[in-house]
Length: 125
Image (cartoon, rainbow, N blue to C red):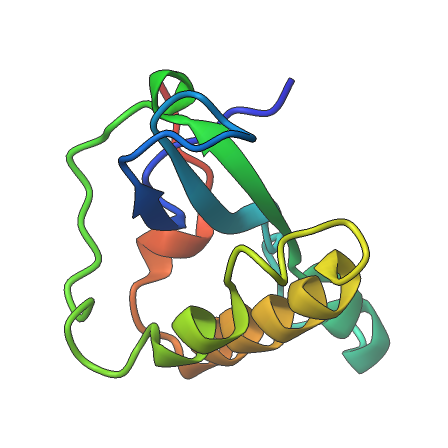
């Protein structure tokens, strides 16, 4: 079982449908967070350690734990790439792999930019 929190990007679907008779949301988040690096590591080791593994899944609202964290630039074009690449059609198992690659690229670009470092760390409870 995977811990989900609102540290991830989500698209809400409040109305139940035939497939899912409950309120749910489409969540894109980080499954494997980047690890710490030090100066003496080689370039190859650094690239391996900063790799991010994303996930894309549909989740019931009851299984999401809200936190006090908020992504400060949500209204700006920080999530536009994710909003375009993650939809209910692309979250289906046949297309999910390509969606994960797109989300991984967006998350890694944000990580390398160096802003919002808390977003790329595990939440400790």
